[in-house]
Image: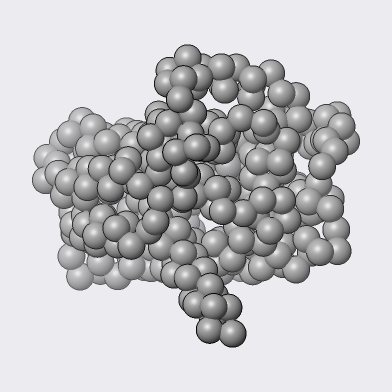
Length: 398
């Protein structure tokens, strides 16, 4: 009995620590979002240039995963985790000292690189410890903790901006990184030496080659990338849509963002309940269908400039299924891959943030009061995802 209780306590601690690690991405992005308009004003730059600081962080998140994930398959998870957390804290502090958009973009890239490494290691540790449907359930619980980040981060950011400046946001993130650095020492190494890749660079290249020629893995990879393309376009465009077109202030915007964050948590827990009743492929299809409806609703609301409450509902339907698609997609990808979990996880993370990073600045191409680029992006991503789902997802067997 005592051993069972201790095991549950250890699992609880593991969920908290890994959830906080996985939260580096949404925290780095979402806490900063309400500040985008003020950053553009204070650094005397355009909305599109201000969004480059968001893009730099997203690309950093992508690149960090592709480097550190495979590296952790060779040397283990714990040592690289401590290093990247320290780098995250330092780069966040340096970002707060930026006096030009160029400086901010540079430090945001480094911050994203180290934050992405923390996120990929969180997923890799999870896949070391759990497999199959157990992994799906654990990832859903992890999403509950991780899901608090998009709920709390924009609210915290909005509150900070109401009493201080955008620089304070980065100081808070630096403190968070430092705390996680010390907390990481509570984790045990999850990848024993016997399970590590010993072929170094050649092994990593071979793993990537095999993964990218695995039709089932690539199918899930593309679905994940397109889904997160929609999410990051929303992240980049929503501050300007709500504050410049619907005339909300930074704190009001943070409430809208938090509302969708709660939805992400709800959908992740629905996924955990459904996994015992439906196949993971069917759950993924359900999530995509809901998101397709959200895309249509959001496009209509923005084109007709319908009331604010319509925007809240349409954004909710567009964004909240991401946790359902993301959780099941990751589990499916881990089951169909035959290579290292770190390499597979890093490719998934790379595509998510790379696509998001490339699409984000496009949202502001026609100015901060135009919704046309945002609508075009979510329509194309949704239609491509539906095509891939109909054409290729049926071939996946678990």
